Image (tube, rainbow, N blue to C red):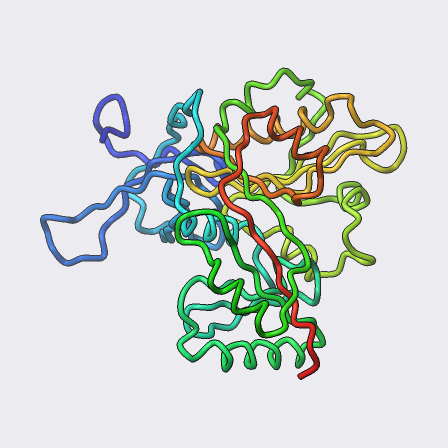
Length: 335
């Protein structure tokens, strides 16, 4: 791997390159003289306090002390596949979608993860049961109910059905024990290039690394946007917020995208009801997709509630197909 035209090793990246795809060489921590250097290629997520965080295509984040850098350069993104639906397992998508919407507080119960964020969204306040809780199901669910009760929250378990490796048996077990399915949604996947290629007025879209007051004004999923809301919204390997300004003090449209290795996840795409069917959602999606492609992503995913016919039709037109369904079960019997 060459880092300069003359073969010299040079560090040609700076903190201003955050968000770009980079290749770096660092001194290895190993004492083995035959492996003095290691190379890392990925998106530079941050460079603060003398430490670089680089997210590889696999989604792994590598922490690199600035003092260990030997060479570095910005590299072009790998070309995105222009056609076809990306292949993915349920387990891969479950982890990718969880990293894109992280809670404020977590606790492990075997291979289950209990998540809480002061009640902001079911996803951030539900159990992610990807594996064995380590104890019988009845005991695990009792622990879950008590954990959420101590925080003044309803107990939810997030499950999935409809793909290889999903949780049909757990869904049946929850229903038998008095848990009610409260909402179901589709997790859809598609080629990112198809979204980036959409004909849309992307020049109107403003991209930022954090949500400003105007963005939050359109995203009306809370009464007061406290620190827990901002923490959840800002979570993820590489997060982008899109805004199309409106004529009033509230945006015409907004969106959120999290880039994680090869994946770009789209969330919070909302349009002023008075300005629907004007291509604003397409513009937001296309602008975010192009940003994600610049960081090396090639595949896209999103979640849409099963009864939202308008959004489902929009995403089908962009090439998104259903990978699996996910559900939130809430405990409803008195304990």
